[in-house]
Length: 155
Image 1 (cartoon, rainbow, N blue to C red):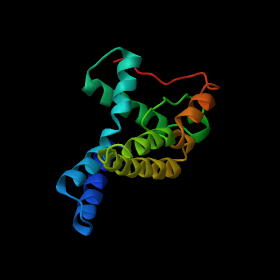
Image 2: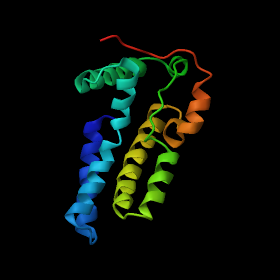
Image 3: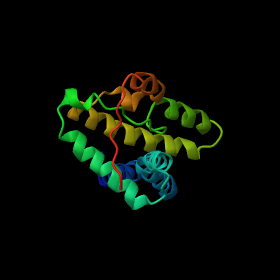
Image 4: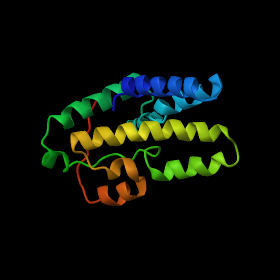
């Protein structure tokens, strides 16, 4: 899902949670920030793959990749390896959940991450992408090893 939608939905849900519960503005802000900042793993992937730290080029890379993949049939899309996104899976949620037992701040991060991943799951289901990409990065790693191609752009 595009970041602008994560920001919009994260803002709406955070404000609703603030208004309908006893959350502090700080807690609601953490939920909001986490609802879209977990996409930093896309940037990290770009940095390691392209050896480039330019965030604008990173956004352009993933946007071009998204547009190109969406132009392909589902069977054609499945030929290409999907990148691992370390913050997009059950494993990350478990890790943050464990940390929340030691510091409540991580609980609010966990709520934001759950909002983010639910949106990603809904979009993946709608577009016909494999749901395991958003459920488990360990499973994704082993499943994607079978595929040979990785779509890439040279900037």
